[in-house]
Image 1 (spheres, helix red, strand yellow):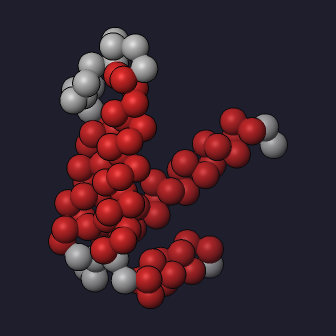
Image 2 (image 1 turned 135 degrees about the vertical axis):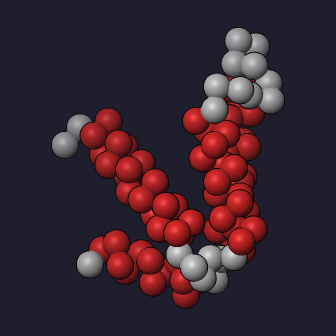
Image 3 (image 1 turned 60 degrees about the horizontal axis):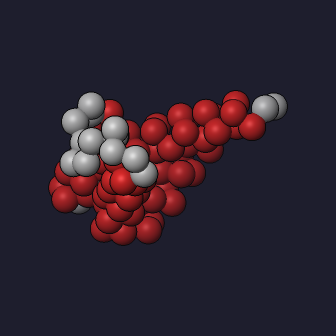
Length: 90
């Protein structure tokens, strides 16, 4: 399997994981909002700093999206995260 294929498979798996977290009724509302913002910001053509500005334009995408996801995951109980991971591997 090529490196790109592995990356794409891992990316799809993460998207499914985040979708399950958002749809889970036990996920805190703030986590759902943060995950939704992360996905919307990643897919949105509108950026805080335009991409045509060298280095800084792409740097905001690299910092903001992972920060929102990290904050959302941090607020979710570990037992819930483990349960969803087990469901995905089953």
